[in-house]
Length: 151
Image (cartoon, rainbow, N blue to C red; front, side, top):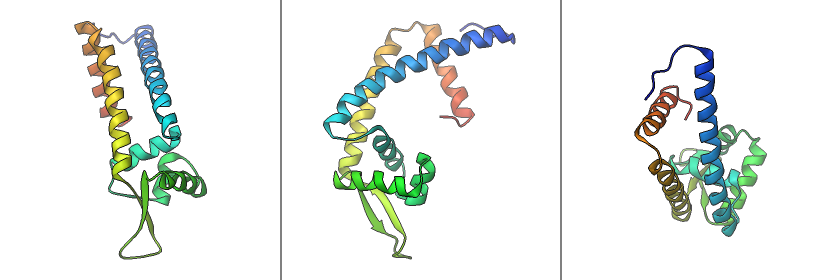
């Protein structure tokens, strides 16, 4: 991998190339997600909520609203639709029955797993076409983003 110097032009050029890579991969993944999610009548926000839920035991409506950047009412609408499709379920907290928790169902986990697998396959195809320097640059960028807790 080439050594990055401290000049703004070099950093800007690298950032521009990375932005192009992100946009390309995002577009590729979104197009595949779109066709698959349309089959199950799931919107992107609903799918993103499912991905959040797949990594948590449960989320409260307040948690969902915060993570999604929505109001609690909008979060409730997302959950209502996903519940009707059997991708999530609402459960009452044992210590306070007024507290509603939302958790993903096996059907929801299956959808997230399937979509993740398809994204990974797409990315593998992209990465397979890279030379060693390009692959190293992607890995370096992934580590840098993870270290900054952006990912």
